[in-house]
Image 1 (cartoon, rainbow, N blue to C red):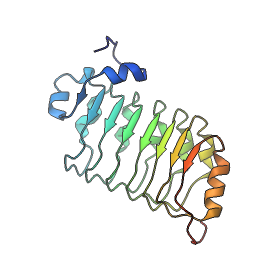
Image 2: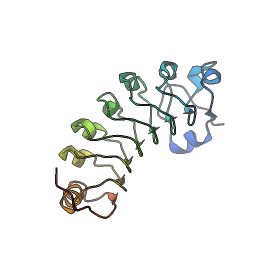
Image 3: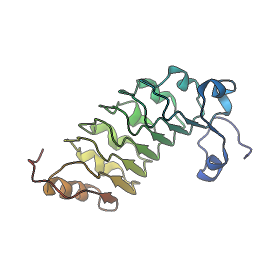
Image 4: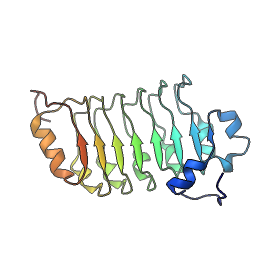
Length: 187
């Protein structure tokens, strides 16, 4: 395991060497040493408030639960680089999440998102945004502010060819994954 000082954004190489905690109780025994936490498939209905005591978290995985909202406390995890809450019941992306300056990967696939907030453009470090299989009907122009975005996955999100063309125009250097356009109405 790499020797790291606490309270920092780890390099990808250092982060990969860190222990992944799968049990919150165990993680809380020494919270300053927890950089990676995976609470997937735990039947959670909300993000446990104790997670926000883990101030050095760089990676938080909460896939395949029954979580329906992301609390504003998410903003306290300032070193978070990867957040995955796929296969849940999330309906909104809170402003606090959009202020996580270190976030490089955000996975909200297979949720109930109907809009992407204007504030998404604040995620200036974001490289990968995974939003497939959501009923999104609003894509803000602030997507163009994601200047470091390498991949935007919108597979299985119904949208017209015009909407796909508009999104492509906002992110000309980003690999965008679309399904075939629908014959649906534009926003």
